[in-house]
Length: 95
Image 1 (spheres, rainbow, N blue to C red):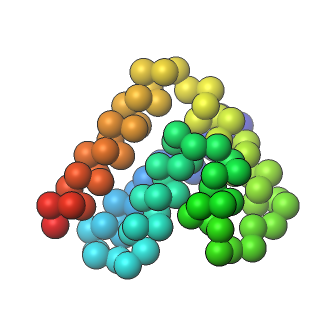
Image 2 (image 1 turned 45 degrees about the vertical axis):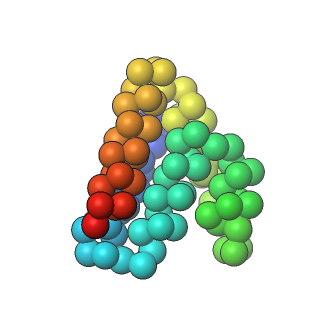
């Protein structure tokens, strides 16, 4: 189960990076989503980046499981993901 969650996290990261690379208007959404996923709570996801979307019960269950896997990462690994996000956000400001 952790492998599939890791794969989903990698896919989200790539999606965010690709959105930034092509100047997609949705890049702010993806960065906010990823940041909340890394350091926020599931409730913050639904109130923040996903607030205007109708998130069904299965999607909420999947997000809760993914968040649980992220929260279960070793602190050093989670810190490195946050550092990566800060770098990406910093490079977005330079663009």
